[in-house]
Length: 103
Image 1 (cartoon, rainbow, N blue to C red):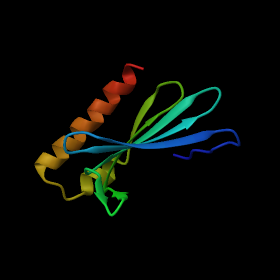
Image 2: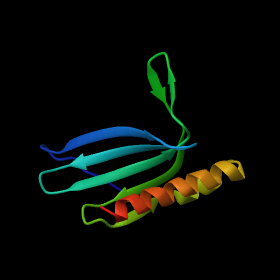
Image 3: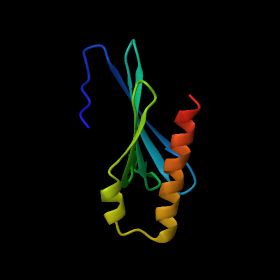
């Protein structure tokens, strides 16, 4: 999925920790809309003042009209994860989908 930033667009990036999973969110804000791209990641780690995380390949794109698209499910399914971690990642995706349905 290609996303093009225009001259007056603003990009916001934030990390939201939850139990066992981190959401890395990119919000593209224009005067007309907000679009959101979320990565489902392993919990973020702070080491020597730097935040790092491992992307679990499962992503959610929310377009300006609210349509949700789950991305990279094939890559997620190919990862060697424990059943517990796979379940947490899928629960996190469901949580994200629910969150953006309410907005």
